[in-house]
Picture 1: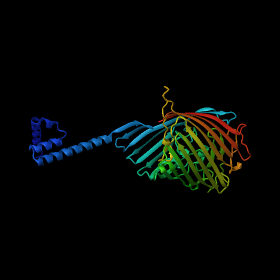
Picture 2: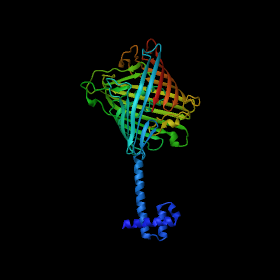
Picture 3: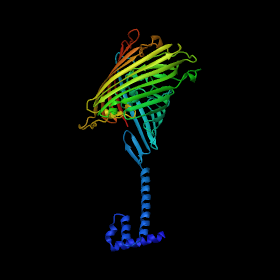
Picture 4: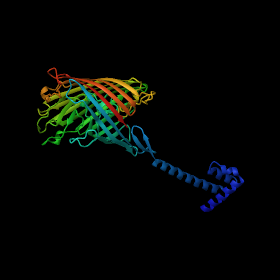
Length: 486
């Protein structure tokens, strides 16, 4: 029956094309069928059946086209080389950075060599599957060693079904320290401040985090407490030790960007926030070691005693953060306090010991670029790349972005006795009070390339009044970095 109808329609269409040439130019099959029904070339029932069949075929064609479109992969270069499905359900990108450094110490110095160095050689991948499951991996190939043969430093999954409550699991930075949480690609100076030696940094655990509303961010993490931050190591359990000596750490962070909450502060960031961390560590496996911002001498290092069963140190941290930005000017500051409560005399001496550190920094883009677009509200940090108003072209029409900055950092270990610390050497000073002044010049040639020049002066004191480094109470250094990232 269907074939007879189709045959009849074909004959009628040919006839219509011969008798009424204009009909052959009809906009659609629907117009042609309606015309033939009107002229009596087919019955209304036959016309309805053909319209239904035509609609079905058209629907199948649309579905096939959409399926083909969904299978397409779009390649682009935006903050990395990325591949994304046309339906945006799947995405993957590869990214990396190389930071080539040079440091020159000005005599008298800490005895550290003036040297070229590859500070970081990162390579990583990130992406998402089925829209909501995100992943990220990151490896550093600059300094593998026998003690740490694996280059992997970050790897996690993040379930982002609901922006207000996301779930992250793996190894990642614990939510404390605005400067630490920001990528080393975009930090204000060549190195982070002294205060960031006291935050947990990378650890393994699980985290609940999200943005309840624009301008508010929170995070709550539970982790092993075996931090990879060089300042606060909880090393491998000593022989005869018990895993019961190490409990899980809890770290939380809450921030507000008042500029977003008010909604009427254009081109501005008014960021305030706080964080805390609580946990326990094996008292004899915990050693605190701090180095200068110029990556020169070690100025603070605690002793490690013989193992005592059940020896635990309660560790608590509190941090406060502030960032104000308007147009090309930015002010940032953080305060971190780390408290250690030791019940025995092994390791860090018995009793309570506190470390305090803070910094204040001001930066100015003298070429006029605004800092507000570099603020990432989804993670409450300055985590987006700055784009020059004009990239450096070499032809004189563009000179990139230029930034100057100054930072003062203070590290206070006066609550520690000299007996708690290792003996001083020519290159390692056991100071109970340290401050650093950093002056910086930054040239951002384009969004992916920058050059940094810093001058860092660090002053030391101990309980006796002065700690000498090769005859001086200070370390002075000029540092330079060339960076490219994608």
